[in-house]
Length: 483
Image (cartoon, rainbow, N blue to C red):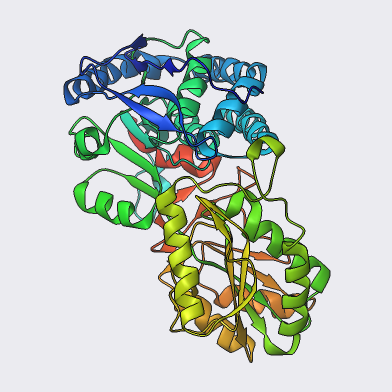
């Protein structure tokens, strides 16, 4: 785990099964959020190179789809092994590139290997079905329908910076197992981690052309990729604004969007306070809150609000703050712009008379964990996703008020409900508009085979290994007409 970046590497793009420099002769510097300097360069791929990659993917996909599931799975199992074998190197890249603590970065790589292996097994156990025509009133007993799953063609996988390996592989692995070709576009900040992930896949001998990795400027290849007629399906994880833009650009192809959230923790007066405090702390502040599933507001019954705030303050002030190389919980945000945005939300709340419990300290793009009490509906931090270590406390008088405030958000990714009365917790959970509601636990993605989805501005479509394979394939029906 070397921290000193001496000679900077210029990474090549993976185009048509070959590691190549772009014909643009341009590269993009990748800045480390905590080293605050460039740690490497990636290629600025051209539109012509995108065309060639998509054309090659279509050609290679046909023979790839003809392989058995076991044959395709053998490549992915080797990929998982290579990720584990190179986990230290890949974790170091994640740490330096996106500022995630080394231990968490390594866990991400190992979790990704597990996800890939499970994807193989899930695909092997997804069987088709046959239907007899006589099963329908007036149906024809001489007809038998054979229902199978067929690949869509070429899938565009667009991943975010915060989980540059896990959230990339969660798209690439199901796409490949479903028999598709893949064009992988990592977030620019996350490209080096994505490249190292694909280097591991390349070592398996994956047939050339099946997958290409394109790094480049969004202004040049971003819209060009998503509007390309050679793309048959898009899986995107990122901000809600980009997701809306994407959904307007694409037409008549399947689209799965995993977008932002403003995940609430609803704390009833009968909550187990030990469980609530621990879950909220982990949910709100791990990786400085740079998670779409982070707890981003607490709706707490006023009868226990003082106790909760006091206990959260005590725990927040114990959090480690600093470098990801020391596995600090609170690390510098991904860039200065993100830190400016989080600071603006804190400033707005304080200007509107929120109570600063602790925090509101800043060094460059490092924002210290901040707890705001008596947050009201007129404050931006009550509604806007910060993607940073700031937690607003909103006091409520009843479950009904908490549910109403939770549902008034444009987002609906996840929520947490804390109550020792399971019937009450289930009743609240059923009324909260979110893809997933956690009862007496923190908001989080996974386990990776669970369905993962958002409603409203938090997404479209369902992920999770089984559902991702479904979304990246289609049903094909063949009807046998018997004599």
